[in-house]
Amino acid sequence: MLIRTVGGYDFFEVSSAMQKAIRRADAAVAGYFALELWTSGYRDYVWKRLFTISAEDCYGVITKEIEALWQGHELVNKGSKEPKGRIFVSKAVILLCECRKCRDADHLQNFIYDKLLIDADEWLEDVRQNPIPIPSYTFDVHTRRGKKMGRTKEEFFRDEYESLNPREKGLFDGLM
Image (cartoon, one colour):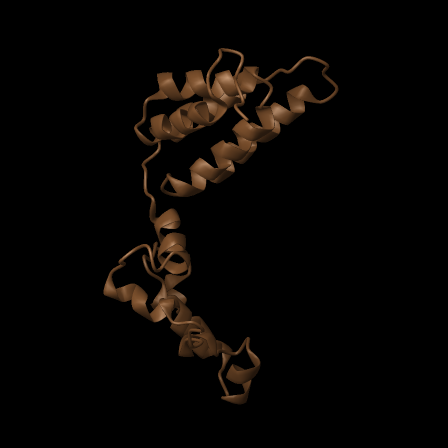
């Protein structure tokens, strides 16, 4: 079954074009197709796709920004008979286009679950074993096994602080 948008486009091609345009920071094309979907009555789908793009293609924690825009969209539509708030979709598309891109989250899940399709670097071999062993750093004062081993809060604070990677300077670093 072929699903068409109001402009006569194939729904799936429009969706793909929107995501690929965002990856390429082409806000004009991405915005056009996002609003094509929105105008065609696929508002929930547009937001689901924008959320996915924020996790799959973008560096950092841009998903919270997309969530805030979605909440604004929902707020202006509350009790409305006619759809409103396409400005929120446009803003989300612009933010996603402008943010730095990184496909690490998508690559990681594919390296783990599609292991036969992808030849990952050696560093992933340990996590491709099924099941993988629980790392020794897991056993601290917060776990049953760590408590049995006599782990202390002092060790926890020191070890976890030293293991931060990458580490940002904190207010209480001098106390560790």
